Image (cartoon, rainbow, N blue to C red; front, side):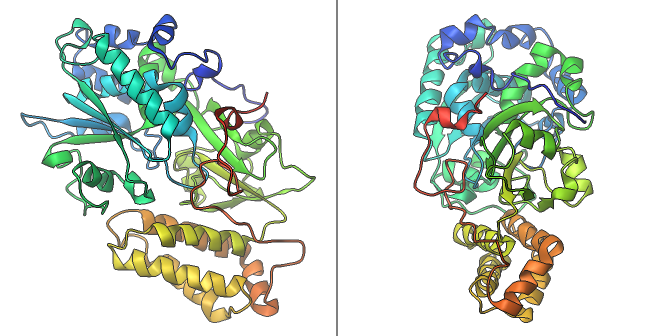
Length: 454
């Protein structure tokens, strides 16, 4: 994909229709018609095949095909659940916030379709503790469609039962891990469960449960609206469809941008106004804090699952954090590890101790107390920890360390030799709770500040 790319407006359609967070206005633009088109008209199996044809992949991190996840639901009698995961607690991530605040009905339409597809009669929208406006908008939308008979014991007169409710998270990053999320709904502490069994077999209250990301659920009605082949025609064949990219850091206009999946880093930077103050691009995290750094050599790599995986990168949720050429990458990595150290639940020893040690060694280097032994230890531990824990927090914490060493070793060596950052570079502080999607603490933005300036 080269040259300029035209943005799409399927997921962020509230930019054109700012009042669709209310039911009447959402229905005016065709909202909930997808339910009328498929429920009672085609089988659940056929609808799952639509998702397979469209090749819709999850937008929550792993990129698992939706049809594959639905197909894993254990086919046993009794209660099943769908959970919409809106616990968006990673630095630089704010796409789901806008979708829940501004387009909650498209989310609920996707939830209802997902619940019907897997035979679930109860669905829970799990919202991050700090997202108060999202909580308000989602709760009101649930009430509106329940009162209107769109959700409830007889969904739009089809005889299908899907009851909806909202659950507010406990306020920790680990709550976004699907099994820890399930634990909190059950009233327990947010400790991830060993897997297998997976939630699709043994989930909420021991019942089959599908946990899906907010953006993924918002995309499900689009497969009906555009048709499976029409959806598949947007973006690359291996991961098609529209995608919301959250870009923050050293760019002129941080915010959410919707493009076909597979836009390049260079194109996304151009859409966000480029690097301000005459500085140059140095690095980026393409999948939020739990991802690997890419460099200027990768500006023309497509931002999608397979393209980034091929170069040792990580697409994750499409949360892009940009660092300019005045950034000390040792300091940036240290700040990231401070986040993971503090947010580790402590259940697994490799994660609990590993994040502590990696942060300590990085702090030694950044503070002028480091040695080659610290660099060697960072390299060893960041290679040993992945795959040894119940969840992926530790794996994600190791990615910026291992990729930082791979791409920016001269800066690590400079800290050992000189006890400070290289000339012209400075420490970047990444706040733990980066609701603003920027690198600056103490400022929670208004809704319009998260929108790109055209």
